[in-house]
Length: 102
Image (cartoon, rainbow, N blue to C red; front, side, top):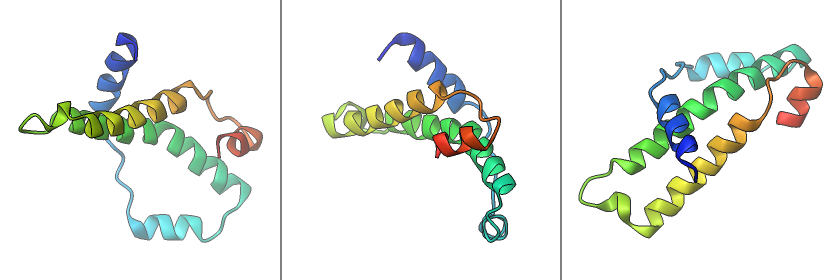
């Protein structure tokens, strides 16, 4: 991975996650209109990189040298791959973008 990617994911990991309750998700998802799907995709496009970056940083900060274990590095790299994929996806502006993102 490039140094730029590591800098970017550390920056995103420092951003605040948006809290979402299970009740809200159930209510929002109970009527999957085209507008709701678009709003959901836009939210996930913004929110998933933050949450994935945070998980990767947590794996980097494990105690007792666990962060250097090959299995942990492999999982961290999966997170970085997902982070890079999400960040490279263009802004979601319409339902065609939502479908492609999904």
